Image: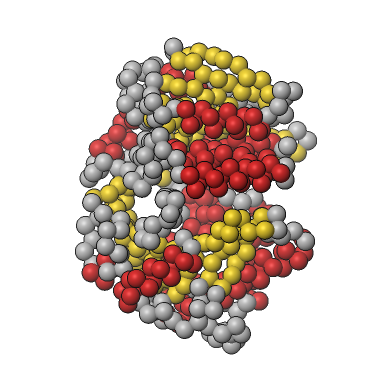
Amino acid sequence: MSTLRSSILLLGIFLAAGTVFGQGTVPRSPLDLVPAEALLCWNGEALPDAPPPGTDSTTLQALLELGTRYAAGGGDSQARFGLRVAEMFTHMIRHPHALALIDARAVPVAGAPESRRVDRLRAALVVQCGSHMEPFLRIVQKAVNEQTNAGTGTLTAHESHGWRYQELRDARLPEWTVVAWGQIDGFFVLTVGAEVWPQIAATAAGERVSLSRDPWYAAARGRGEDPALIEIFVGAEGLRERLDDVLEGRASAFFGAWEAESLTRAHWALGFRERALYCHAHFLVGEETRRRVYADARVSNPVLLATVPPEARYAVYEVPIGRLLPQFFSGLVALQGPKERANIERLWAEIQQQHEFNLERDLLPHLGDRIVLHNSPPHPLRFPLATTILIQIRSEPATVQRAVERFCRAWQATIIAATQQSGVRPPLVLQRDTDGVWFVRFQTGGADWFGLAGPAWTVTDRYIVASWSPLALRQYLGGIGAAAGQRLPALPRTLPPAETE
């Protein structure tokens, strides 16, 4: 397998979750084990809706095992690995956890100096699971059995600062792709990269400064209103220095898309005050620290709060949506290579012209400055991202509906054209029901992926409303009544030519 594909496989388990460590010789939280020089870190408490430790969701476990057998039958190692990541994630969110990118480096490819290959990648996952260590060890063991064989894999036992750990090397992978796992007191620690596990152990032992003891981050955390549920630590300056080499300048391009070229560090904190979520951030720009509130738990706007069902947890974000969306997609495009960026920009212009829509003209100017998220109706498996979202419409909802409709039809046509050209059935398709509800349906191997459908979205005269499935969307709109606005009549299958300026 290629170096890039191998890297993605090994990193996938980290990108699905997170928690980090911290302070003194007796670690008290995952942040106490994360080195202060980490470039990026996600630190989270146990999610409120997650099943308690030591219990299993029979339905979810059955889905995961069925998916693993299906992937095994097709010889798809990536699909099996992805399912192990999902299984790890379902256990991780039940405990305090942290995920950290510690270091990355690339070198030129021999004979192709314009290309780069990863030469070093160091990352760590830490979960404060106490006596509930067995599920994590079991999942790692299953992944090892599925991804390696006796002819290429070497498993060895080591010790660092009095803690034992296992280290796996695979002859098919680059030298830096070392995976290690073990227990530090009540923490499960999984690392990628040479000598990362001993680095985490040294931090836990107090020999290295942890992220929790970094002075600027400690000051930013101390300004919080309530204990945070989720924290995100970004060493922007270090990311640009290290990842620009790996990604050929794309890290700086990403920060540039967000108008954050001078950002040195950032810290986001999210948490609940009763049912309402707050989100605020601190940014270090030069020598100045700036604070920004994105979601205020004390919001009292009755029109917005009327869209939240009783007892649901919710957040009301105040952001310039018409500016945020272009920045978000520009950031994604900035992470692509020069040729890919040029192709994306060309295709986007062609698609808009062919399908007669212009989002900058027909959609963005008509969106408001508030987004409401809540967890009703609840997902039966309590997936943390399975929420309902309302994006405020400032003006001309019919124009917004036509823009969304043309965009979705363009997306749908692009998937169909790509399928016809390649002859390969795509992993997802886009559909619209007769009532104007659009949704994604997942499929693989020529069959529906367990019949999963979602997310789904539609437009009212007040909001673009989305939820985690068509059924959930209709259930929400039917239960909340006029608070979410009046449903607009579904547009006909053939739209009239778009008006041009």
